[in-house]
Image (cartoon, rainbow, N blue to C red; front, side, top):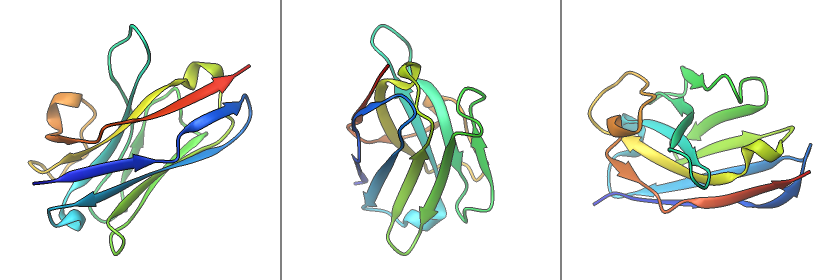
Length: 125
């Protein structure tokens, strides 16, 4: 069984940075696409970033492009989300997810089959 555990969330001010981590266990981490999603109160879960198995290909939502960077360390079985220039609208619970069914980067929640519990990010103005 796959376990994904996020960490690194917190309360910061606008313009600050945070780095989220997601540690995976239970399957061969290096084989799979990993993604980050977020969900704000009253809103649907939305795509943030994703990275392919090798780290050679990434995708970011337009709302975070140029501010967020996704990366992975397959030896540590961990995926990261570096978030810079944070804005109040980035406030949400952030989830990491694993897609074990395809090799190409997916941007829709239903394409991922394992999820972490989430970590809260709050950005004050």
